[in-house]
Length: 474
Ligand code: 5AD
Ligand code: SF4
Image (tube, rainbow, N blue to C red):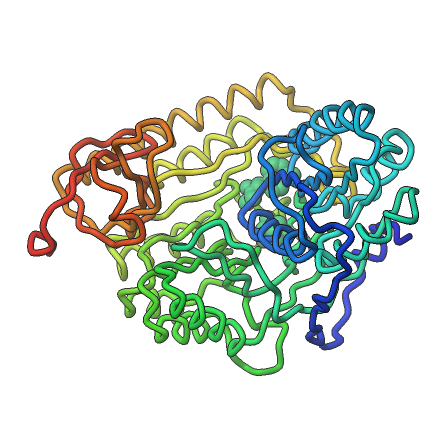
């Protein structure tokens, strides 16, 4: 049993992180069993689920999309805001019910929530029917924990509070055959005061450049058209290593593999250098799209958040990117209702939105996370005020999203076709180079191809278009 410990998780070490090889030899006990995997949260979690899925398949399990048909349930959880937490505990109710009918069902909880002390305490005290709690640093151990359960029959909590090693040779059962996520680093060293991630994901550990490039080469050779380089703060890539390379070097090396499309998330304005902007503009296969979280437009709030930049510095960076890469779409994250945020401070956020006119944004009401410095601040702003601010912010964001999309009407853009439109089977969907969702009439033979599409109609959250001839593309 390994319980999470926030004090341990806060400790930083300078020790080099060693690579660890994963052992993939398992006994046959789970062959033919069905597993149900549910993922909450960000792309990092979705990518972790691709590893969880592969681990279960290496045990011989087959996936089912029906909870009631499963022998093993794995919930890969998110801790970023309170509502993610509530959703998981709500879903656990269903699992508990199923386990009453099917006592041999195994229930495992992984992901960021498992790294939280209070969550694990709650599971121990109130949810004894959960068999395994595993953390974000030891996904590769899940098969061993499952096998141990066949004999153990008691709750097993295996959460490491210190960050794990950097694993190489991880096997994934990827969601897509066209577009793949590639982890370039784990954890985050920024410690924004509201954020739980540095505690749940540990200190920053970058993978070696040559390993990442080799993974992208292999994906390209297997027919993948797109990679998204993943990290909590990709622009800080390499800072924890002793090799002297950074994100611009990585991006350039990945661009030289000639994989058709490269994306990366998430950027932090603090670590975004001019050289990185140059590399993005220099290579055609680095997509003109940047997700650049603002969080707040007030210097006072940014300081309290520990974001390390001012509103002016953010705007300067934004303008620099637009100047060098005019076609670049820029999206953002904004939090409203940080403790004691005044109306004036909120209006400053709206002002920055008016200045930057983002292509779109993820907007959130601040949610206190236990163990973070911001959660200790006594807050005088009511829930109603925060909700009203969120609505005002969303109205402005949607106004600019529509305006940006409308400006594309009549233009011809390259679109990577990803699949059939779920609602309308006569349509296929894909993403433009600038990361806009687009639906087109077309046959499914086009899935996996990059095709020229003329944008016919723009909406706030998607575009409609038709395919045109290659020669019409400028
Ligand atoms: N409350 C609300 N939003 C948060 N985010 C991170 N932590 C919190 C929190 N405690 C948002 C930030 C981040 C995005 C992934 O989630 O905007 O960029
Ligand atoms: Fe959280 Fe800040 Fe790190 Fe992003 S950069 S994961 S918001 S601590």
